[in-house]
Amino acid sequence: MLNINISAVGRLGADPEAFQAGTTPACQFNLAIKTGKDETTWMKCTVFGKRSAPVLDFFKKGSLVTVAGRGKYTVFEKRGGTKGNSLEMNVDDFTLPPKPVEESSNVTPFTKQKSFDNNDIY
Image (cartoon, rainbow, N blue to C red; front, side, top):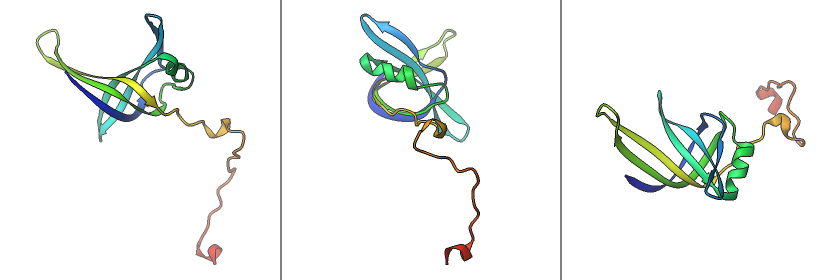
């Protein structure tokens, strides 16, 4: 087992799930991290305490988020004797996903994009 401080950027594989750790509220979600052209690494993320509330409110399946915290990489033996590995993080900090444009009250989306050429600039 290897414990390290890490940060990662990825997309949620499903909506976060709430649970209680004793009397402490918490939530978990799986983060898909693109590690190569056709390769994805999955990390199980856990958020404890009051910080779990905004995660449950704003993180949704497919959300692109950045997380940072204490990570744990474990190699274990599966049934049948093959080796497996697990990547987990206790999240200390995160970014909330951006609001979609249509939900922002002060932003008006363009209805049609105008094309420009060099004659328009001079």
